[in-house]
Length: 223
Image (cartoon, rainbow, N blue to C red; front, side, top):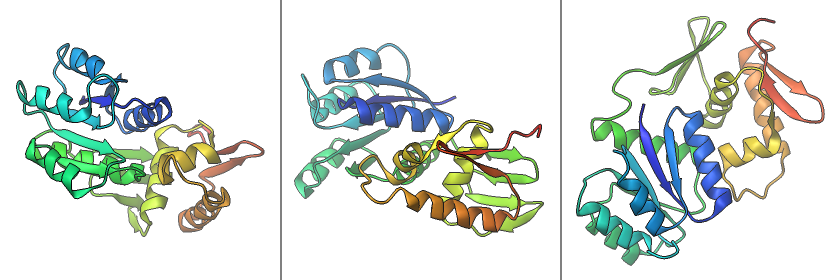
């Protein structure tokens, strides 16, 4: 099990990151400012630090500098600052990658997976998710239905992954938008319906059901 320290001062974004990463199989610890982040960093080994730059008390650059004095743990900077100067300063501190807000949650998760694999961490062994006659390879991003490959878009794969990770759990459109499209998505919620319609067509089976007035869920396997 891989542990990620999430350092983010905005509660909504912090909770979204925590939920998304834990759904992906990581253990998380959260900090809301630079002082708390450094205190928590000393309590246990972490496999990656997801570090916002605009933090109270001690900013992210200072937190990174102090972490680098004691560890080469992978650091992924997350910030609204997208200037070249800020990025170069971060890479000068030997960070592993830099993501600007607003960001795509699936892309962020993929960056984390690649960083950990490059550092000899997660992703060395294949991670698979099985449900009835469906099989998802979470590393290669391949989906099989009765042994045959499914041609899915990135969004469709993430939708299927989300539902199959928790059969029976209802996901509202708002939850799916936040998780797959990003916390700042202001488009029409019906985009979710459109993607699910396409996913159902490709599956050719009633594996995803509508919970009227609430959202969607994967049918429980005992039904």
